[in-house]
Image 1: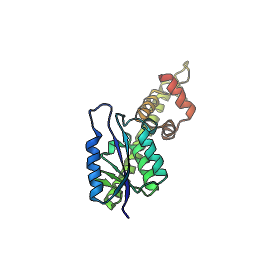
Image 2: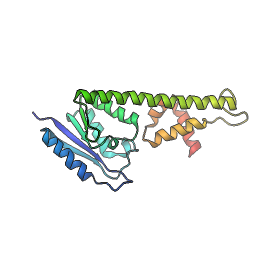
Image 3: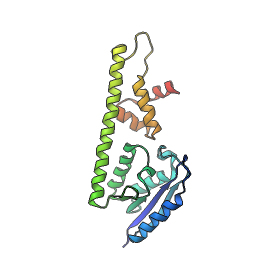
Image 4: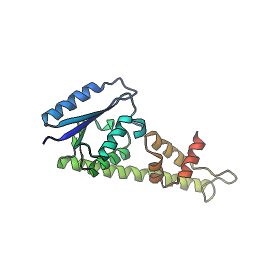
Length: 202
């Protein structure tokens, strides 16, 4: 019984790209490996910084991952899946939890092989490293705010507001396509604080 696989393709809004070349190459790879392509998911002219809600075919792919409708996913390049390392690792975890293999052509990543699994584990290490950097940036910003103001980090006589370092980090993470829930979890802030920040920067 042949392995059932799907292809995910995406073209950027900022580059004059065609998904046709990606599809031809991935179809040929599937043919050489005797894999059966059961569906192709295409997001055309959509930025990789958008979350799954902004990429309808990617959202549909993730839903089908949860339903385990196939055995493997083929994609042209790792940046077709997203721009945030954390979002990428989250996607890889979802795929792995369903025992679905992932083949990324440009990076030579095939999670069905021992080398591919090792590369997957390294992605997790770097994602944790990124989370630690973000936490340190927020912690540093809060400490600076305390030095320049009150213990709460608020300058004396001014209304309470989120410090500028946290604002910058939150906006950066949201721009990458990270969900609000994940931002709150990563930065250890409440949902109310997040929405207050968004009101201040609007």
